[in-house]
Length: 319
Ligand code: PSU
Ligand code: MN
Image 1 (cartoon, rainbow, N blue to C red):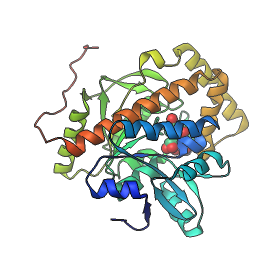
Image 2: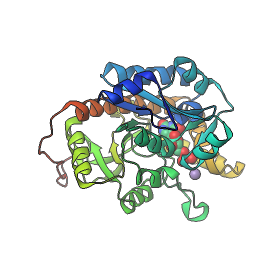
Image 3: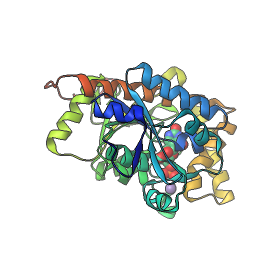
């Protein structure tokens, strides 16, 4: 069931062929989003978390001109250790394949490649979105448009709070990407439990997410379903430190003229320094929670029988 030009690992191929739950994991968070050598530990831990919850992990990367869906331990080590690895958005995958190149995949490319492989659920930390200062820079992550064009359920702790969160929510609406708050009626704030922005739909269980996926399938909807899963309040970054550190990171990116693909990794790394590592812990707590929930959703979708329950519309003022 290998779909060219994908190279599925034996484990992933077996799981997909047998209708068993699979969770895709992106590799840019490993190669560009987290400091070495902790990144390798995290990459292994995320795969382990998915397995413990009864799903098969499929970390995605492009290696030597092949799209790899499911990596060997040595390949995972390469992704985590090779500082020269490129960051590949959806538009970069074809030239990378043509050149026989290697790179880590972002949310935009991983969503596309997972859907191509037939994987229905994908976990990340926080998707990209509209950058602050968008009006001058026009910097909007390719993740948003990509989500509108890939049928995959993406579990994310909102969008990275280095971004313009309200503008990103507006764009998700324009792009018709359905957003479900997971056990919350507020859009999460990545490092923070809540961004303070209300959502239109909220679900309580993995089975309820699976039910929305089935309904979308019935309707022929081929865009992503974004499940917004907040970092637990106990693990969030102190909100004051958060605001201060982001202001510092944005100012230093501007004064150093950092733009394009480098901006997000630069901001994330500056935050780790400015918060004495606290932002890293909050980021990791978010990613772990997302991998866990993604596995639970994949299991619910693969095994549960359809029911007729729909997501509830949150009643105002119930949180
Ligand atoms: N989530 C994290 N850390 C990350 C990312 C997500 O916790 O580093 C990565 C994802 O790969 C996402 C990318 O697609 O950041 C966004 O980059 P950009 O803003 O350049 O589109
Ligand atoms: Mn960008």
